[in-house]
Length: 151
Image 1 (cartoon, helix red, strand yellow):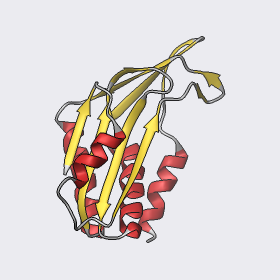
Image 2 (cartoon, one colour; image 1 turned 180 degrees about the horizontal axis):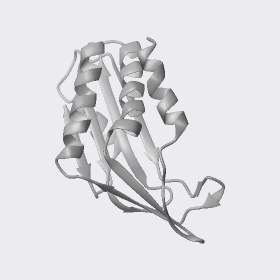
Image 3 (cartoon, one colour; image 1 turned 180 degrees about the vertical axis):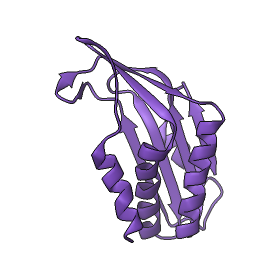
């Protein structure tokens, strides 16, 4: 398991290669990469700053990964989340999940990302032509987490 909160960019291919290095038991790796957009809530975004509580954030991410491991037979998980000032098109988050079978890898990857959006202590501030604004939680993110309680 690899959990990092960092300012530096990550490389999806390198992270997946590292995950599978020397492993022949992995049958599938599912991944998600979230990118900074240039538009949110109908207005342009020129940059975004992500803040977090060091130590607390990594612990929250580890708890999410442990919950996924309790639901599915996972072989490895990588979660990397960036902080600091990001520009549109910059990668923000990577979730990669290795399992023996694709179904578990896909499900666990989606589960971790859904919970990360609502449970991990990150705060986003967008820069727009109209000024800066903090990004509020979305009802759609809460709904995504709620469906996991039904399964």
